[in-house]
Image (cartoon, rainbow, N blue to C red; front, top):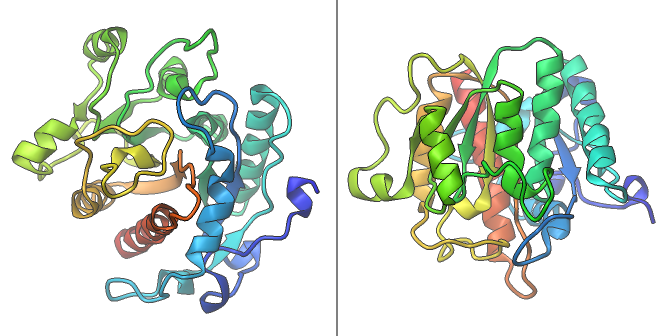
Length: 290
């Protein structure tokens, strides 16, 4: 069965009926791509697990029902070819969403997929920056001889001239640390957050007004969300992550987002539920602030 023929629940299930594309504030785009994982595997199963877990969410969250703004779940992007083909297909799916003036929300899949919406947004002439929540910098030029590795996605964004801001990092190669210093990439790492909390003014004043949020679930501490391919101790807890998202979204306009790198574990459904709730909370914050 092809990805486009696959039967799957729409995001949130029966509590929030599927909206028509033209009526939905958010277009959820599942991209089950997995080609360059370098430790644990299973990210190809992330989108399906998130959608199924989302059917257990409550519609009401923190004083609002974000689903009332409309959520459309698009067909799965076909990921049966090489990275270039998959990224092209993903870019086209995002472009359809942008053509309707809606917000694309991608479900990964490995982090490589995040460059596709960045390309789609840049082709429209939009000035924007990427806010990256992650345990890793993903600034390698190549990894295991692959420039499209999940470990290289933010370097590809830099190559396109897209500004990035990094939150929650705690694992960098020496070359990545040097590049971050050379390019003056702004960041707040996990150890600083643990010691001093989330800064009140998180993004620099010079950072673009429009932002794309890319949230790798390994930004969260593995004691909270262990089902990811490259877990790192010392990550953000739930309320630190939400506070960081709040302070970013309150001061900027979000034009797209993704949650990536969930690798579901058999008989452990907490991780996919947490990922689904994270997505719904990001939707909530977007609607409350713009």
